[in-house]
Amino acid sequence: MVERLLTGSKRYYMWLAFLCVVILGCLCVYWQQLQQGLGITGMNRDVSWGLYISQFTYFVGVAASAVMLVLPAYFHHYKKFKRMIIFGEFMAISAVIMCALFIVVDLGQPQRMANVLLHPTPNSVMFYDMIVLIGYLCLNALIGWVTLEAERLGVEPPKWIKFFVYLSVIWAFSIHTVTAFLYAGVPGRHYWLTAIMAARFLSSAFCSGPAILLLLVFLLKRLTGFNPGEDAVKTLTKIITYAMCINVFFYCLELFTAFYSNIPGHMEPLVFLFSGHDGHVAWVTYWMWAAVIMAFASLAMLIPPSLRDNMKLLPYALGMLVLASWIDKGLGLLIGGFTPNMYEAVTPYAPTCAEVVVALGVYAIGALVLSLLWKIALDVKKESGHFGD
Image (cartoon, rainbow, N blue to C red; front, side):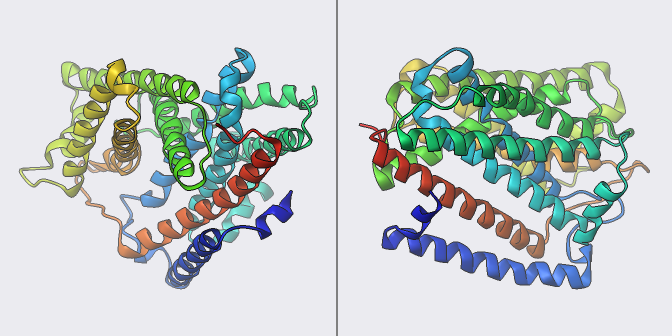
């Protein structure tokens, strides 16, 4: 099926060429980071995680969200998801690759990755995070390729693949749970030190990941005519709505716990995020309020069935939901955890241009992998007659 990558429209090759140019340009900046070190980023002694790790955290959730298609399709035999499920599997593959790349660029020196393998430390959460991410990548590659090959041949997938499908559901929950433990297990970071961090991560993943998938599928429909099915879209949108409601509810629980208990350590990060420090409003404050407005605006458009089922309004609601979760779970989460620092002082952090460019390079690589995988899937669906009505 790989030979299908060599055939395509002029627009397809122009898109691949554009991504390759972006990647090469960003690699030049990354080479500068390799030569000069992480000093060209906005990170420092007090803020040791920044844009790279925030994007890693977010895309682990995007990868885990594939379970929202797999679980109904295989556990509850909801066949209407079968047309779209391969795109979710392939999106998970590109998301895990992006996660790995964000870890690589955050390390400063890539050879340090070998220490995790050469000197395994089972008492480290990072060790288990590496295992679950590699395992999830292999599971999605195996399941996606075998099921797509079966669709190409016009036969049912082999029975043995179901074991790996069921395993991938459990694995999807594990990758984001272990990632949440990276945060919740750090002492002295009150914004992260909460028992529902893993639950917050999962609820955020199960609304933002499928929302990204739907937005990409809508774009695919406009460009190629692929139809995922109206019933499938409506069902997945309901799942997104429930998950977003739970996500907002969990965040409100954190607000109540922090301010009703009146514990300074829990209140200070939230106060800094939403109102700045000592009268000085931080740049992240505007982002956090924008996330709040977009989160509630998206729910206002998703909860009423009449608005939720409106296909013209749906992309706007999903777009606001994705942006809100990206801010909250990205730099909002990182900056809130590192502010104030261990000395009860505020060390400001803002990504530098170099950080942003390197992150864009990782995004471009993810888009390239996704484009190639989806190109194969689309060609197979065209030939098998499952392209959509």
